[in-house]
Image (cartoon, rainbow, N blue to C red; front, top):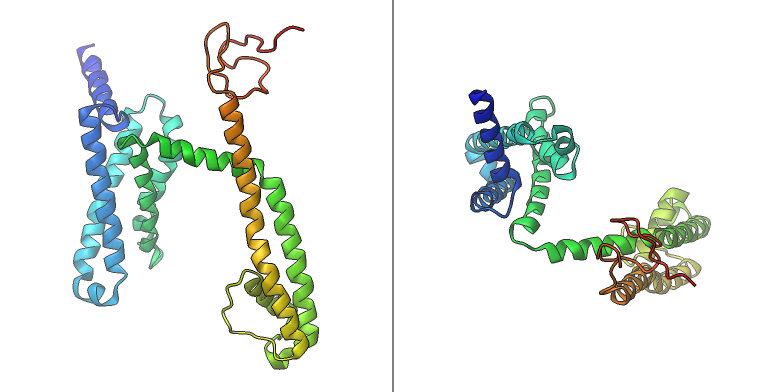
Length: 278
């Protein structure tokens, strides 16, 4: 019995340190962890430089394995002290923690895969909790909400653009032909996409007057096309802002739970009806 109690105490203590961000030890642990993540990413950058890799490749290799072993041990400890292990393993941060240690081991089989360690930088997302930047997390959720509710409009928009560049690309293939670089319809569609997005690589360009005229119209159309997704998302964000502003201060009359949307019929906390009887 005492041994089980000590075991529970050990797990509880390390759970607070690793998963809690409002304690002194927890903050210290996360700050050290962030520093190690940054150093690990820096090692990947340095290792990708030919001159440094040639001179210090062995040292960089050893340091990266050291970081990997540390992060692997941390991942295992997180699983051990987690009350619901499955919940952590399949959570957003749990998946990132797992993926961040895999590339180094994978490099033993696939040469060059160690550069995928750069994925480890995603672990810096924990900084939002550590530095109490919750308002930025809320802002990102705010943007995600706008993207989610405008996805149908954006899909229709991109579908229309895809049809446009397919038609224009086919025309340019017929007008310019292989002698001017438009060797196939897919290549011509690639040119149309590059032109409509105003990127303009210049690897393919029309030579005939008709082709140049179409290219000019497509460039002008591109400026208008770029603004469309921005307008769609901005409109959704404005509607969300108005909804939040309208519902500010609205609470359930039964339990006091804050109501997130005026369209809700029942309180998500107690199930009380939110509609006023006629």
